[in-house]
Amino acid sequence: MSTVSIDKSEILEQVVPAGTWNADPHHSRIDFAVKHMMISTIRGTFPDVAATLEGGPAPQLAGSVEIGSVTTGDENRDAHLVAPDFFDAVRFPKATFTATLVEPTRVVGELTIKGVTREIELEAAFSGPNTDPWGNERIGLELTGELNRHDYGVSWNAPLPGGGVLVDDTIKVFASFSFVREA
Amino acid sequence: MRVLGISGSLRHDSYNTRLLEAAAELAPAGVELEVYGGLSTIPPYDADLDALGDPAAVAELKRLVGGADAVLIATPEYNASIPGQLKNALDWISRPIKENPLRNLPTAVVGASTGAYGGVWAQAELRKVLGILGARVVEGEVAVPHADQQFDENGRFGHEEIRAQLSELLDDLVAAAGPIAQAA
Image 1 (cartoon, rainbow over the protein chains, first blue to last red):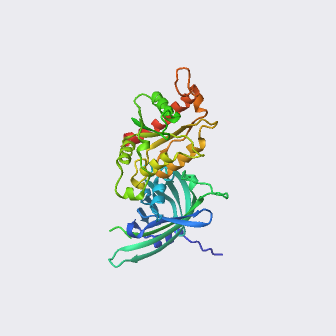
Image 2 (cartoon, chains in turn brown, yellow):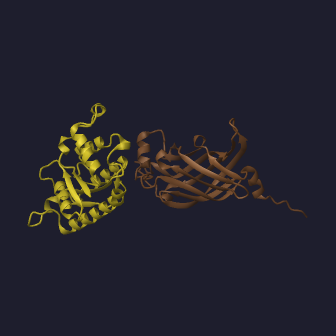
């Protein structure tokens, strides 16, 4: 009898070749979505993102976002989001993530928001490597997941007249990175 | 450390102003609590006026708030909410929202009323408004009921229990202002 075992480290070496890969800030962002008034969806973005991927058989991934860069397309809402009611950006200017496990379709790591660190598991999709028109080698990474904002103390809310609350507990997260191989 | 006290009542013998004066007496060493007296001079908020720049009274209030390490607001309760003139002043202060001087500023809310509950609804409304403005709203409330019966034999406002609560809230407010004041 023969068995076929899949060595993930071999696959990972193909999707994330050895070397240091830095997120291109112009082609990387972290988006989020949350139910509003129980019926509709508000989407927002943290455009100021930094992330580094160390390739090889056991890739390492770490990154951060500038909380103050959040935008949801409404100046008043954005001002409220960075205020102490929500993220308290003056005290906690960055959210950070450090992966503890990187697999071809799954990334697990420690996410810190507002000074609170919790483990989160994200679905992962790597793509590339591919070469851009200027000769840089690039890898794409899409991460998706969900978190409960109350786990991180981002807990402002308002009751609705008919029951329920204005802002849902569950936040969907969509991160998109274009990593460039360090020269 | 400088704390700016704002009374939501314009009445000369306002219980809420008396409450702030009691707070000034109780302020910890090294903390100066100045009570703002210009609320009645703030014009009605008007976006046309706003576009021309802050009226002098508004500029002065913003300067006082901006120069304070913390703010303590005492509000009466009118029709289950905060007085219009106090809300009006906060609306002026809030403009523009991202640069308003209350942003991240430690702020506490107290209140006195002649009713049995001490204006807890108005205080809750005020906390909500301050949170939206981006203030660092300190938890804890001092709700003074039956304010007309709060004078002792020397005419001093606030019975012992109220003064103890006020002292505790001031300590929390000063503690919230500490690290920020040092970082600034």
